[in-house]
Length: 274
Image 1 (cartoon, rainbow, N blue to C red):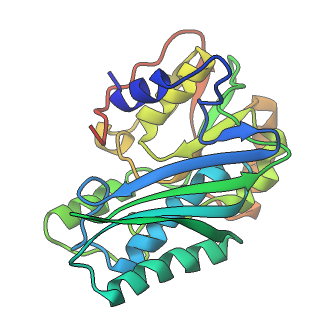
Image 2: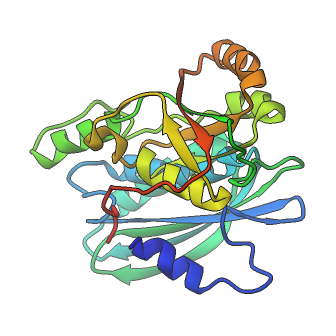
Image 3: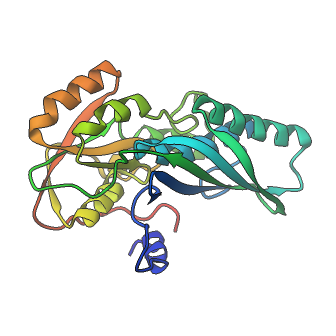
């Protein structure tokens, strides 16, 4: 059982907007991710600046995944008393610089003292044509951007006591904003690829009550690798040439991995955070 999905679904109401990377209310989209020490990162792995930057960009990722323009952010920070003022400044600088790159204004939030560093960010964005998880039809092609498994490989370096480059995907994810904006008219559905290919494929299939036929093989380790922050998208076979052309124009690596069919997809990965 996916405990995370179980709990989120338990909050669902009759008029619920739960089910996508963010909640769509008219043209407005609201999303939130938490970034907790010893769950998503260790402070010895990343500088305070890198922690702030990553906390912000993984939240902005949800807006980008839905073809939305992120506009505002609310920040919640639980910080240990051992953090110096310099570390706090660097944490805030990482958030500010990332937010500025995407045109996001940090408009408020809350802070408390804690035994470790835990961050929670809400992003408010806007879209006239949001990309949702529903819309997948039998025969549609499913693809992902970028390479799968790099984040896991770098995480293993870190857990073994090693270091990774400052531009590592684990440290500094790259979002596919230009590609999604240009490709949106030709996409059936899509979502942020953050919990691993198998796990997020399971969410896509569950949202559309379908199964898939694989066109590409992956090792279980690569397919279960989370923290990728790539895109999982679907499009009609007739639109494949156009989507590939847009990928090339935006310098986005694109790999077709499966096609949708009748049936049910079973995720074989363990949940990352439980």
